[in-house]
Amino acid sequence: MNDTPNFSARHTGRLLGLGVGPGDPELITLKALRLLQEAPVVAYPVAKGRASNALGIVEGYLRPEQVRLPLVYPVTTEKLPPPFCYETALRDFYDDSCVAVARHLDAGRDVAAICEGDPLFYGSYMYLHDRLAGRYETIVVPGVCSVVACAAAASTPLMYRNQTLTVLSGVLPAEDLARHLARTEAAAIMKLGGNFPKVCGVLRELGMTGRAIYVERGTMARQRVLPLAEVDPASVPYFAMILVPGTRWVGEAA
Ligand SMILES: C[S@@+](CC[C@H](N)C(=O)[O-])C[C@H]1O[C@@H](n2cnc3c(N)ncnc32)[C@H](O)[C@@H]1O
Image 1 (spheres, rainbow, N blue to C red):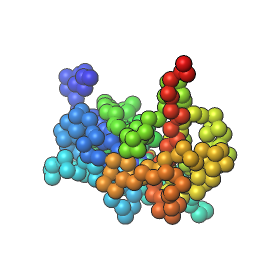
Image 2 (image 1 turned 30 degrees about the vertical axis):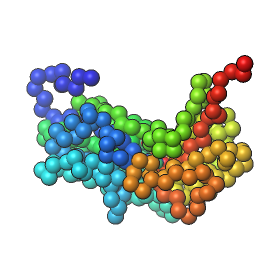
Image 3 (image 1 turned 45 degrees about the vertical axis):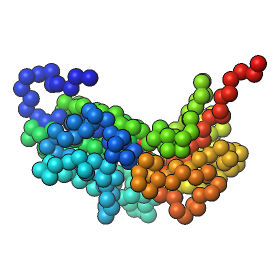
Image 4 (image 1 turned 45 degrees about the horizontal axis):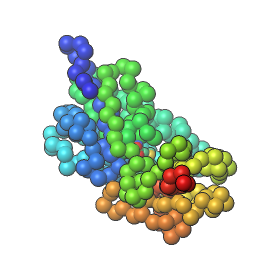
């Protein structure tokens, strides 16, 4: 793919939305790595008071002189006590992040906005993209998505032949999860954390627990893969998902 600008004199920097993969630093594409290492500024999402997952994946590839631009999430949970509103806090956060990124772009510096997994698949990068891609030259480089990385970690095929895979957020209400799961042949349920007991309850009611595999921190140093029934709900972090693989296809009966 050609990523050379199609005009001769570029006055503003380029927005580079780079997928850095699910955790293992070797699961980054050659293209994302090249653009990352060439960029003078590296913007990364980080929750207040925590280490950045995305930065942790690529830190070993960066040079000291590359400017680090942390984009700090003000909140880490969707359930906030009134009068706080998660949606408003998040919208303001992305608006402010864009101002910080645009300052570098306007000064002619490329900004590598790194994103765990794939940038356009539930990625934090999408909210910068929606606000900035129309104003600045933009390149998006896909990353290895956590769903396929977790299937590999669990060494399980996800869907065979014409089966349908449904990707769900564990944040959804139980009724919505049940409705989607009842109609699908394979599923990946993301964003677990405190949503884990609710998701497990739905899978139990639908008789899907026996097929479900739990993958925590897939491809990262502390990866755990367990049958769902063996998971202690108190130990489930945000970086975990449940896979319900499609029924194995063994070929037509003779
Ligand atoms: C905001 S989404 C980010 C998805 C990411 N952009 C991708 O392409 O995979 C965060 C959710 O992805 C899942 N996730 C991301 N990386 C993971 C990993 N290494 N192991 C297990 N789940 C992961 C978790 O369910 C987590 O709650």
